Image (cartoon, rainbow, N blue to C red):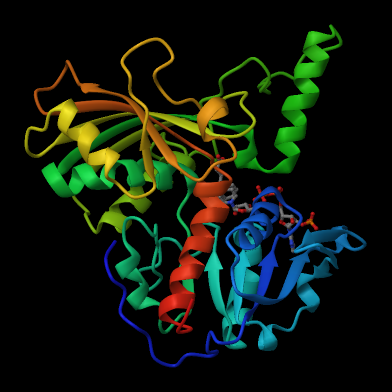
Length: 356
Ligand code: NAP
Ligand code: 3JN
């Protein structure tokens, strides 16, 4: 991993614990963030779980205590050292600047700031050095889940052989769209299996037993925003405006774990066996590639609930002499969102707040 320089202007010293706000604490991502803060023994002083008025009366469990969820609109960030935002882009738009104005550092899991040139967009295994640009905004953006697992798997190949072109099809779990969509898949599946399904409205697509080639809204170029996020974000993270990327993002009836079929064209010829060796040594990556029945990773069996990006089915692309194809799966809520944000926070604690 690239060393990250120390920062000046530290707000707190890490002999003391940090006061952390989780914005969107009752959501799938916020809930995973709180679990991971506990799992990784993050130096939390006070945890502020924040959500909307809808969550008043709810609580979250942290280190054996029930903490009441408070309303974001009413939270004063002046005593909060770091805020992990995961409540949608418009919430970040309205409240992240309010948090940074109060002296808080924001790790933002939404798309709101990802494409702004003075905001670092960080995957800790890939470009931790981008954190030197933390100032003056004090906001770090967490990439989209589909981008994160793809770039973690491709970075070692990019460094070794160069990558000119990426073609990717995603198979994305419903948890990527939030708690309500997880419940909707369960509801539709139960209705269909018990013969109680109603006809879908004209034009509406069911998620149970289906595959839907639209995630997020359509852009003018015929791609969806989810697909274009993969293009914009990969270029920014790799600092490479020339890399060509074409994505097809598909929602499938899986609860947790995104899968991706990726084909790349490298600058230099690299053999599948070499790629396997590179990826076996790569941070955050596990290779499971036995070339036989079941010798590959899947979302449900390997990825869900874990921290790694799994890679399998690594092979020479028969359609290009400098082509490699592979299958990549990871837990979209953990490495794709919550875990990546907390890994960023851990670097900030070590290099910005001065400890850990
Ligand atoms: P979710 O399960 O639907 O949860 C949404 C959370 O946001 C809830 O805690 C909700 O609280 C809170 N919230 C919504 N509106 C709010 C408001 N006006 N003020 C305060 N809190 C508000 O969704 P999720 O899966 O956790 O995802 C949340 C966000 O994370 C997404 O919108 C997206 O921006 C980001 N995300 C990023 C990735 C990624 O690829 N990096 C992946 C998934 C999600 P209430 O119930 O009280 O409204
Ligand atoms: O659909 C998925 O699998 C990933 C979704 C991510 C997402 C969902 C709602 C809003 C995002 C994101 O992180 O790009 C956003 C958003 O912040 O725009």
